[in-house]
Image (cartoon, rainbow, N blue to C red; front, side, top):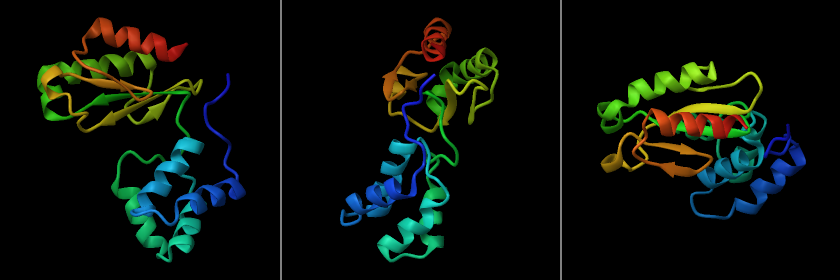
Length: 158
């Protein structure tokens, strides 16, 4: 099975950092770009970002840990995010999250043993009117029910 991500390479990381270092809000932009390339933000990249932006490691680490979307380890081939915000919980999101965990054999925030699927919580997708909602590999899904969830899990497991 191939992964959509590159393996961590310090030279490639430096290239990504240099591409975005002059942009406004560069810390977030760079962290997102690193995660897009490698599937996570490698720990070794934190001091590289700090040096490029003339920030302390603590400042970059603070940004990295503040935002829940940044990963500490590579994601699976597919990422299934389930909304855990109040509107989705009130519309049955808790039962759907438990169902997804049971079907995949992992709890929220983890990746299946075969590295196919990472199941993540997300705190609001902005689809409250169509709750509960989810996102599979960046594709938004509203009005989630057991049947739709089962179809998403099956799609992600392929």
